Image (cartoon, rainbow, N blue to C red; front, side, top):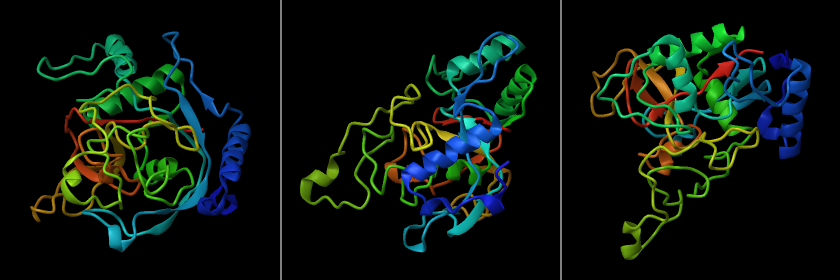
Length: 282
């Protein structure tokens, strides 16, 4: 549904038009704008939001481009899809673990309840997604980098879905010095807000225009895309099976949480600031 040749360039749409386009896509799919699949175990699946097809500008202008960030180009999202409104939570992943006998290594730090599940590898994420598909009868997968950035931007062309600045009322990042605002004298050593220094419950910060929470900060999120080329600015030979992650985290600065920002993570990497979000085909 919603073939790309019928889809708009979303940066040209007003907020009201972007919402209407999303609502129209949900109607065409015969689904609610936000919905959950019923699972065989009697519980609902992750809460999902419909994301309409469209064309957008992926990447970042050269003047602000950091390591590994892509040059701007127009990308067509050819079909509507559904994406998790939140990262997969510890409780949601634990349901899978209880059902399948997934064992956690004793040495790993684990999150709880509605905190995003962390210290899971891409292989763990793939097993969880396969379990969701079996339980629901629908296809679940990781988002591509383009799908993730398109959904995070929600029509915005600014650094963040909220604009060009990011404050502590909008995201959980490691520092909140407002991007683009210089601070003189002794005050430059002080943060604008006290960082949380850990992943916190999903959904505590405002959603973007399409109803997605925590697209900036909290935890980095795996995508399905391989990282191409050099994986470390200080080690030219550092290449291999790295994957693109998006979104920034509680550990890094707000700059790393821009919509265009990206970071390579090893295919089986585990970290306390790394999780994932699901995509469901419609």
